Image 1: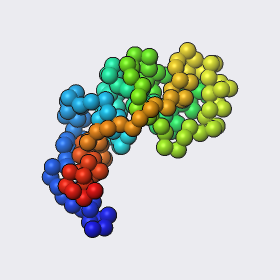
Image 2: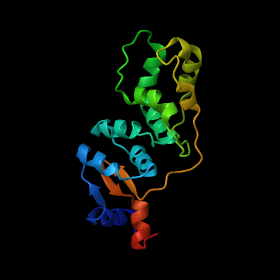
Image 3: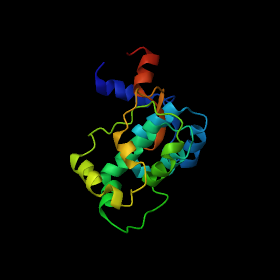
Length: 181
């Protein structure tokens, strides 16, 4: 069976869908019964077109792993937020922005096991900007350097993930369960 046929079977299986797309409150309610590894898997494949309320909820949990927080910080930070925070003096910070949530909660997170790598790596120009302006920017006095340097020790382990705003059983887990792997 080729990859397209396998994907067709996967998406045709009604048991794959756990929570439908766009059901933010229902996703958060479901996440309350899940592990930090599942939270990380949700973050790894989260579609930002569905907002950041789910991400903010995860980041506000004491049991959130530093790797999960680092991943969100790096995706949002390397995408745009951190560039602005390091280069614009006197910017009005949005305290509810997910990067601010990570900075505020970083030392509160109890574990730092899960790898929070950023797929493309932190851009060298951003690291240079952090070294040059970090202590005179709105990041001064925050753990942003720790977050940029965070690595973690292991991959998350969960049978669930997010996909286009919904919660699903991961395809890898589904394939093993169905005997395709």
